[in-house]
Length: 82
Image (cartoon, rainbow, N blue to C red; front, side, top):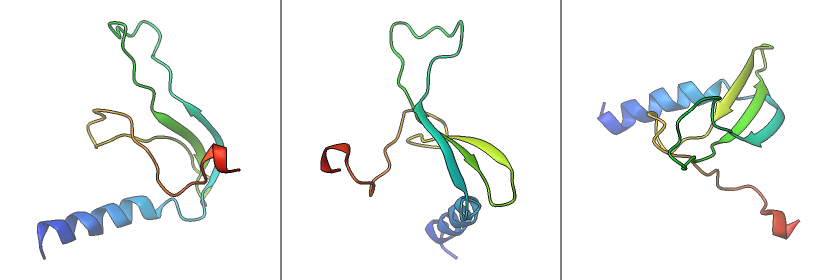
């Protein structure tokens, strides 16, 4: 199995827990109290969800697993198109 196939399999399993989840709130993240931002803070898209099994989670969308920057979700209707 290629590394890309292994990664896709892992990520598919990781994200599959979202099947049947309910988004109960969405917002942009805020700096933690006392966090030194040096005048710069990148807000992350943040979602409070309840998984199908009842587990409550807070999700933040990042550009990579290390949290090096906020991300963007494609495929949603744009606010100006509603």
